Image 1 (cartoon, helix red, strand yellow):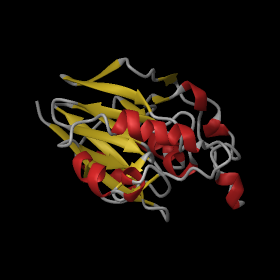
Image 2 (tube, one colour):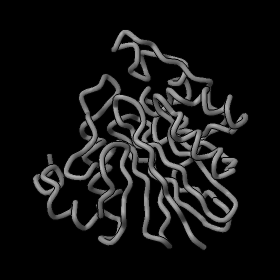
Image 3 (cartoon, one colour):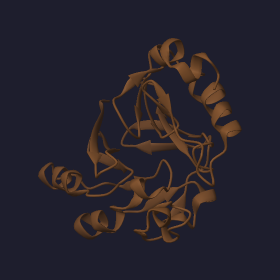
Image 4 (cartoon, one colour):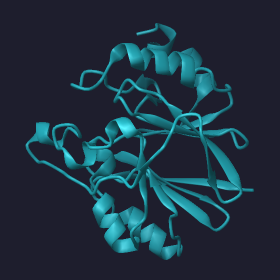
Length: 212
């Protein structure tokens, strides 16, 4: 079993959107503004995603969904149930705050924290990590020591918690009890910026060390 995670930094926000492959199966995790490079990669590699997983439903993580699905096919879109209506509501997905409202088709289903999901022959954990948004999710593959963590934790930083639907107490708990419970050697792929390793963030990330 070989897990391959290929990030694409899309749009002005340089949102990391990921193609995850194992064998002949593949997921897209998040699809932000200007998704053409991600779509081109899928077409060039003859990859047909079995699902689009959303770490959360802010506009920079969903803006390219409809374009992707019109180019590749009607792929199921899955998110946390607490953000079920966000794709269709610019105020909740934050694009309305910029004066450039974005909507995308509603999700087809929901992901439940603690329930395993399968990609090819691999099994992943879905973990709820609220704070940056109420439905923020992380996708963890323990066997390969890799995780996609959305906007909860960055290399040297953390997700914003000043949005109307953010909660600093939840974010603090998610980082302390969810992400810092992962092994030191685990590589994490955040929603913005470079990948990093949990052990490095545990000892050098000022927000983690000082318990923001």
